[in-house]
Image (tube, rainbow, N blue to C red; front, top):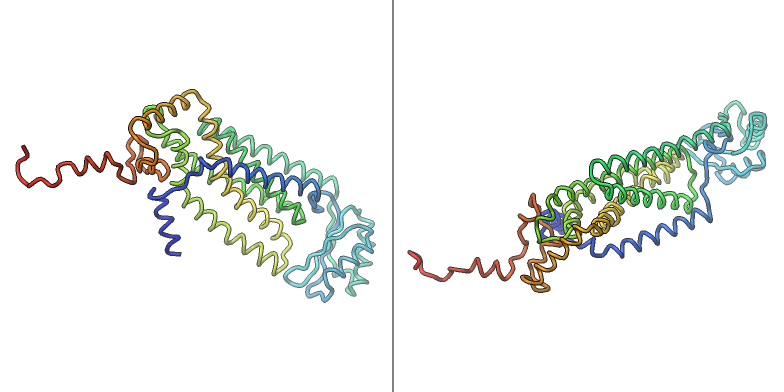
Length: 371
């Protein structure tokens, strides 16, 4: 842990670094592969929509039921003629969901379940959700997601620039696709809690992305007035300078969510916790990945297409060809990064031959007046 802490401090101070932008094609390939797997899982298995979206009934039994989940599921399917979902809650009660039934059918199913479970029918609580209401909820969820995306793109385009808005939008689509694909593969039920979790992770993903974009915006002021770094290299410095913050934020957020998912949902059997915590857990991890490996490298790619950035790259490379040999330690500063206010004021993290000669000039002379 001490070594990890030391590494984090060195990353933060720019003593070491990793070239994320240079290896962007690897990250793009990994993201495309994961996204394809998520889409295939979604197409093959589909989403298991909850009764809030398709209508049906929810039956809740008394506490401390001795009947197993599999037995209760068999009883519910025989009584209703429909597929049933049964969850055992933390207090020992059973939550039985049956989709596609109306009020009259619900009363009959309730009586049959009471006989099979050997409880009084009045002890079973029945809640009905109409299909029209469920469809309305689904439409509102999609509308809310669309409005959120539009507002995010507009805000980022105004606060930063349209290229950053496009990169953030791609990263958000990346996070949503992966999260929805995991839901399809795992088979978890999609409920309003899932929608809440999705909207929450989008905020976390944007937070990490905006932190890097803000650093990048500050470090690229008057970028064309210097000939030391290209836009991609400064973008890489921005990622490294905020890397520790992004990792710490993500880990701190994942720990309580993991508790909800594996303890609250897995051990205690709390159904709603599963829906929220899975989307949060997957989305937070995907959001941290996309903000580092997708959003900023994509901005660098888009910016490097500009004529001004192409001209800057030519000038930077021409200057290096004149004054710096390949492998010169001065180039370590490009990857490691520097935390000065302006790129032209940055100082190499390792002294190069010219700097060493300048510093050693005058050494070895006796003290006193120089001639």
